[in-house]
Length: 479
Image (cartoon, rainbow, N blue to C red; front, top):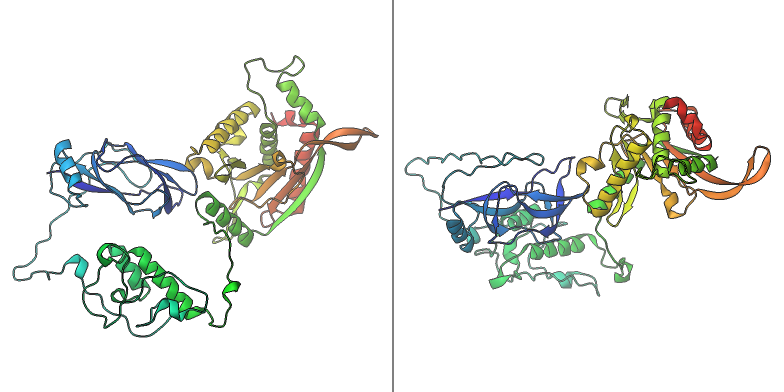
């Protein structure tokens, strides 16, 4: 007989606690190999294909596409053994148990927090003679009735939910069962029982919407919502006061961005300074690098982007003003200056705003930074960025000029200490060498954490960046 093993959603790293199922890559009954990807999930950081540490036949899947699962929740079960016997287990709908066979072996590969080695051998507990466990069917286990005290989240005995709500407001929930709260409960899922216990809900007073009156999780959640409305909503309130409109869950990338930006505003006392700079010479230098007019690095060289030039200018500026390449340890009440510059850059994708990170940018030249930005941008657009490529930044560069705007007040990417914002580069009237001329002008904005430095340091950083934009030859001193 095969051994049926349960594979749980592993720790995907970087403090992620949940993931959304995007697409199942296997069906029940499929044969999977060790470390074969079985599901594609989306975290707050990136899309990830999760490999299964066991080889065998898939006997069950947990969660539909679009559902969110916490780390440690069951993903699927696999019958490990011969294919024929494993298929028998799949057809029989085996759970997580099973007869012990040959202990499965794994590849030893890991994501984060789990490996694919053989599972630990469970010791069988020996029960003293004369002591037998009570015989209680799992779907008829008695549930202790809660105290008959009505409170928020608790369903008063004998209350009709729809009748207890104000006129015009109806919540579609399972109706309570009339009569005394006695007898078996039509519940199979332990998660449903746990949810009911947490909200002091008497399951015996609900009529389930599942087959043969089975109480489903949706029934319990509807009853909880209705009970909360009964306990907290004033009877005299008008139904029209409720907000009506499309509701979009804050989860995935959008939820992660919302949480990080809110935390930045709560914890960081930020300030912003800005300056207009004449970028005409910078654009001329870029044209020369890219071979416009016969010069350049050759026909096979990759084009140098404006973002790569600005990123190299930032690393030079941070070498002069290391206060802005730091973070604040609030518990220790210390400023931590960081030796490496891990430069993040904002990238807008179909999944939302992401900030890929160029590692060790202080060691790279313009070509190297540009190549890495290109690679990370393509990965961001296709949703294949790894969680490690989206975290660990120490300073962020935000080129919002690509959206056709001149200026902004950037929100610092927590827990960093500063962000440089770059507007569009457009022709404007400008006094050049004492005469009015049309020059290519850009607005630069620096938002900084006022705990790590004062305005003099921030102004010095921004002025150095502007000088390099106006006179790229200033960079030659640091190359």
